[in-house]
Length: 498
Image (cartoon, rainbow, N blue to C red; front, side, top):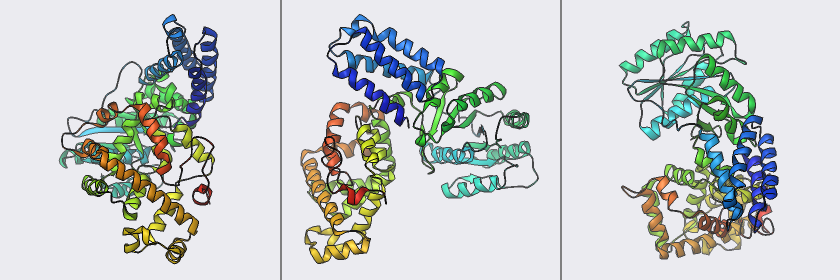
């Protein structure tokens, strides 16, 4: 999300922060580059113009230019301005789904990912908020649209309204309302039909469903890849139907991200969620502060903590912690670490949330490294016997040949994995002795422990950045030695895309 914009802005600010003192001309030159970067990211011209004007007024003041760290001050001003632009007049807060059953109306054009987003939100409401959700497809036009939602419902364990052929969308919506009331559901989600473009029939159908159900939330799903057209679609839907929020999809593949920056300023409607992939859990709440941090390369520590909490089982983590404190870290432990990284979205996803690690993630990507390497490493561990996993020190030449052959890889790649294991074992031993592991686990899983926001707030981003750069050598793929002269020797055999 926002890769190109983030890269351009970080280049501008790197030059600013390296200068001891700034003149007004320095700031104006930097902000001209910021404006170009915003326009290239598909931010609308009025929004880019207002943004730069707001920053320039604050950044050329005497208090900034004469500051001890003027470059850092300018970055902070830009950060705050980004948050203001993304947030708008007020925080929309949580979805209004009290007073069960609460109807949520999903609208949008065909191909925007509306049905998938409906299922993703239903899964999120079920798992994170403990809501009982009913989904209903109102799309009587697109072939197999109703069946698609029913299949997704089975995959995520969420009920769908039984399909009755011959009903119109309003009849289906009324039946969903009745079943939600009788069935004791907290929320019922209405997935309406889309069109390739906004026309009278689409608007009339959505308006009829809205009038019949009086939805608590009307969420517009738009494709983030369409850039400014997404903003135009949002404006038109809001004028003719009235929407309470926007869900931007396919933001994982959007190197520009201008739709997100323009959406609130142009339409006045908040972005409630962003879709970041095809998986059913690939959706995030849109938080202006976190997004601004990501754009400026400051990371997103809160999301990192949330992902860890969502994917690590407390009991399993407790058992691992006790082993690590005793200095025990075998190949089974390493495999669990690798599988954990897969669940959290892969190395690039994790690195993208660490302060100052965005550039390194880009470097890894450009070098041809991808997350298939993690699967290969897991395959090597699985080729070992139980005895070998528990005691990797017994691995001699003949055993190594057998293991590598069983995984379809080279012995050199196994040696690389074993080296990484030794490095991680040493690191875990040190962390266990220092009490760092116990403190981290207590924070994540202790009863009455801090929230992800509180945990992130207690972390020093600069210290995290330094620690991350030191620890990157212990991450999957043998990335030790990065940060200076490119990728280390030996990585090509493991990490190159095949």
